[in-house]
Image 1 (tube, rainbow, N blue to C red):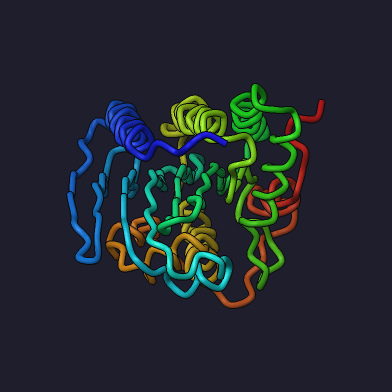
Image 2: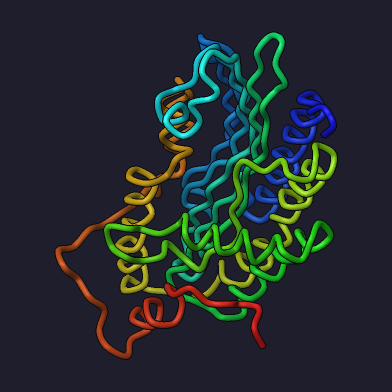
Length: 303
């Protein structure tokens, strides 16, 4: 197994962040704020944020590279063998909340982790993926998103997409509501089984595929006409996004427990959210179709 190259990974992650922000600024017409931060315990990052944009009501494309000498409790519970090791974690994470209810929210993350100790082999892995959360589902959009995810993984083995698609379905699931967060995509963690060079190449293809997966969808939906009904339903469904990120998301917990920048970690939260007690959509409505046709585990690539 080849030795990891954190410098090469960091260089690519910073370039990925820049390329994605540039593409999003071109669509929105408003520049992203740049906020550089440092972490007292070690490391720091660059947050790129947009609020009240022309297309994106709120969004962030964040880079972080943090280091430490002991892992937070959430990580130690899962990997007790890492006790006593120095560690570093780096990645690019983004969440985009468009203003138009017909344009879906999207999340993407690619990351690298390494833990070292004198006289021992380093423990390292990659993680990442992307997933789509529509408010008004469009089958063509879901199929396109999943096709790009499939094609990014295909050169590295036909088994990867079904594995990572299933992992995504299981991970982005609100257990307390027995409901998927969206239409899924791909998700993977602790990945090093093909060696460093192949694993890094796969992660690059996933990250580089994000713009191909999402830009055509947001371009097609950003100017679609909508009214108060659609905005109200969007705000209600955004509540599910908040619930998942605060209750179930491991990345949010790791970031907060490891002393990451709170503003950057919580940039994933939508700006306007509503909750209602025991609300259900009207039968036969477009809102009901989201639940019956899209918030289900499907093979989106099936004919």
